[in-house]
Image (tube, rainbow over all chains, first blue to last red; front, side, top):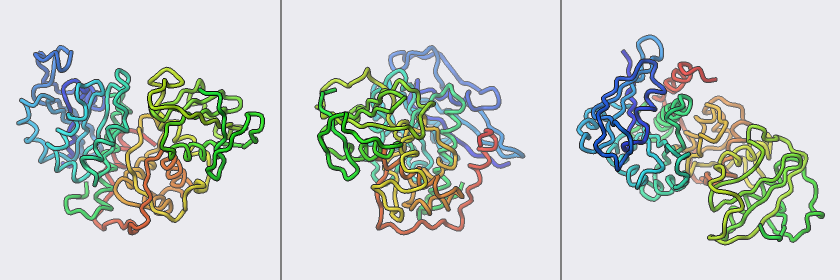
Length: 189
Length: 218
């Protein structure tokens, strides 16, 4: 069986579970529990282990979609998955208290994926908060990581086409990095 | 907006003109040249485009936003005339429309695609190589998946339009239109010193195609 593991990461309330539900062809396995941190994200439940969905490409090839918990106390789950991950869709909600800090934290945590071009940043809830502007995210990224151009664009986790586009961009970026960058860490997908 | 009206002509110079004296220019080329010029001015400038038959577009670069009653789905690819006005402003002055407005990437993509059909924008050289400085907001662009792959290539290597077209197997005008649009959006940098992109023998661009097929996208 050929499997490609794609992680959906980001702070609590960014829309990870919803994004996987939009894309998965099977009912998503959820590990939601009551949210005890209504200050960070005002929603009744939050992911405590993993969300899981799947996209079958034909034959025995699958894209496995994992949503990893947004709260750092669950980050032992991150290390279990990142070694197997092909790439990651990092969702950051634009109305988060410090969206840039959240974005940079995840990039630091998932540095190996970042270096091989395996991270796409989807900014969610831009309809709720229009600031910061999307170019501001790119500017912050350029200041911290001037050597890489990371895809950043608005994503609506409720919209299958929007989430699908994020997946397509992720794969396109991985393939082009592997094809054209003379970097030993860039491997064909 | 202020009462001052000026036309940014194609050589980049500003000329004080009354609206009556503005020449009729077919298509988006004059607007594209004006936008490209205005983006290089260090002080804030508002732009107004009067698209004959389609109303006025107000552009505020400070907020990366625009306002236009005409939805982009009805974007006129070849308008009869587009009159351009520039209006100096200050960093703190109110925007000429209710914010947040619409993301400017979507409008500039369309103008860039249609201003110079099948050829390089007047400020570009066809044999220069370009790299991406930032990704556009793809949520606002009616972009094809071939163009997504071209964008990914520009994020990882410097390429001419011809090299870009060859890499993804697309017609040259499609690649040139993408370069024109991204240049107008200010998200490209020229990289003339970089070597031609050479695909590594081990690359197998296949997963993209299989997901594309699975999602049923053309």
